[in-house]
Each structure stands twice: as C-alpha cells, then as structure tokens.
Image (cartoon, rainbow, N blue to C red):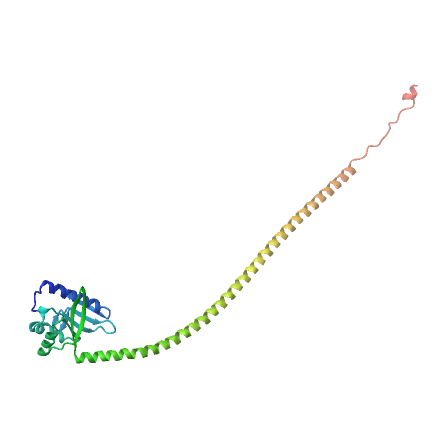
Length: 273
C-alpha cells in the first residue's frame, strides 16, 4: 500500500485525469488494465506480492506478455517512502517501468531512482495547456534505448518483407484474375451451350406438340369420315333390304284374275229382251 493514503482533492482529480488520458493513448497498441481510485481492475505479482499499479500494459500480438507498468505521481507523492514502497517493486516486474510526474519534478524523481537503484525505463512529465493535457519524455534508460533501436530496425526490415510479400501477393492476384477470367469464359461457353440445348429441346417439344395436334385432327377427321361412310352404307343397306322385302311380298300375294261367271243361256239382259 502507498504511504500516501490521502491526496489533496485537486491532485487526486489531476491524477485520475492523467490515468484516463494514458489509457486512451495506450489502448491503440496494448491491452490496458486501469486502477483508478477505488476501482481496482489490474493486479500483477512481483516477488510473490500482488501489487496494483495505475496502468498495466499487455501485448495483444502473439503471446500475451506484460509489456510495461505505468505509475502516475503527483507533487505530494514524489518522495523516498513512495519510491521504496512502490517504484522499487514495479521496477522488478518483467516488463518496463514508466514513471509519470508533474512538470518540474522530473529531476527529483530521477535523483531518487539513482540513489535508491531503481531501474526505471522512462520518466515522463505531464502538464496542462489550458484544458489540454500534454506529455513529454525526460529520461530513457540505456536498456530501453536498445529496445527502441531494435524495434526501429525490425520496423525498417518489415517494409522489405512486406514489399516482397506485396509482389508475391500481386502475382497471386494476377494469376487468380487470369484463372477467374478463364473460368468465367468457360462458364459463359457452358451457359451458352446449355441455353442452345434448352432452345433446341423447346423447339423439338413444340414440333412434337404440333405433330400431336395434327395427328389428333387427322384422326378426328378420319373418324368423322368413317362415321359418314358407315351411315351412308347403313342407309343403303336399309334401302336394299326394303326393296328386297317389297319384292318378296309382291311374289307371295297372287294377282286377282278378271274371271267372268258363266251364265246360263237365256239368262241375262239380252235374253229378257
């Protein structure tokens, strides 16, 4: 626990404001854990003891490791007791140790770190310009300088690799485009063939339908003609039958002969005269 148990209200407000500003600043690159006032979100274990620095920065790329520990101090909290109670423990963490102090207090903080043999990576000052909060780096340790140089070299070597990757990716994109064009042309040809086949099938189907219609019409006509012929033949047969029947009836019925009755002589109209 910090020896400064209670800060003046004005300093506490500035302290919390600086922490929030740093949180939004470091959030672009790292995962930020914040301990503001009574809100204790991030804890780390140093030499078997759990400590709560103001900010805890962890890497988001690759393995999630502790990148740095950030401690924000005010003018009242820069002293030997605070340094031995907190700074010395934070400096023993696996990551870097960043110390933020008010403008004009950087020399005192640096001298305390040298006397107490506290390995601080960077010392920054903060100050207000109107309502805006500004930061300025005052000190960077030799080990931190080497790390920064290595990071710069790595960043410079990355563009070459990225250029090679870009060339390779450009070739891959060109080949992909060519393949896509070929496949699109093939697909278009296949689609045209399929469309032609469909049109041909439709035409054949239409011809079949037309043939069926013609066949139906012809069959209907044939049926009608057959019916007419059958009617005519039946009528003729009936007429023939009637004629035959008439002839047969004529043969059967005998014709009446005009036979005069024999009269006796002296009888009749002439005899009476």
